[in-house]
Image 1 (cartoon, rainbow, N blue to C red):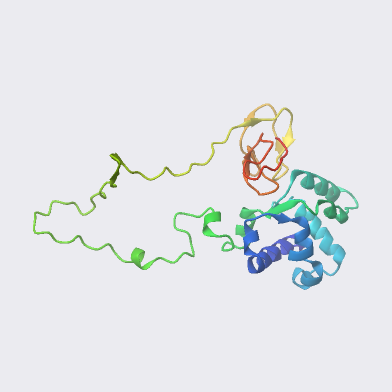
Image 2: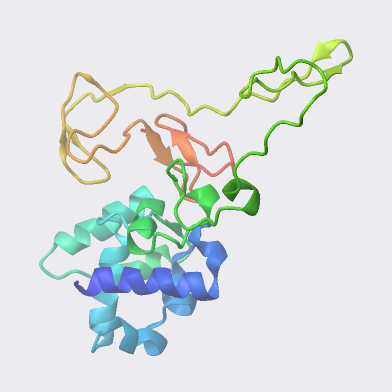
Length: 243
């Protein structure tokens, strides 16, 4: 485990303990290094000897290169560029003090599978860790005996819902995920998640290297999922870079 992974694990633990709402909500970069995880209070837990080591780990974390955080495209580009230079400048972090970031849900689940609420996790059919209620643990009761002929089948379907205003009431349809629309790159590019090479001139939906959906982007302010070519967030109205 290196400094960046150790920092992220400690960040998830700290947020879950002190500010659990930030597990699923965005916050400012300045809050991260000044309030949530300041060096003077967490250097022992982070295992970092100097403030310079802390700033370099924070620089790589905020660059978004490892997929631990959801960050703005410009911040990813600027911080990623300085990381590749012979002399990375961690002071560039301060230029993005007011930018908003959020914890990447998949990374949080890998670090702490129980950190996110069930509604925010992609849970299996029977989520682990949720106790079975008394009603669920008991076998179904036998059908009440009737003086008439036993003509009803034991697994008969439930009675239809009551009619309201002459029509049969029915539950609203379950929400379906937005169908992905392929994108076509005019020239060879790279995946924003893993930086793998992407082919030009052919419709693509998923990255051939990491499998991430390339047809969506996330709002830099609230983290909402947006279409690839949208210029504004439909949730908070924040301007976003078009694909």
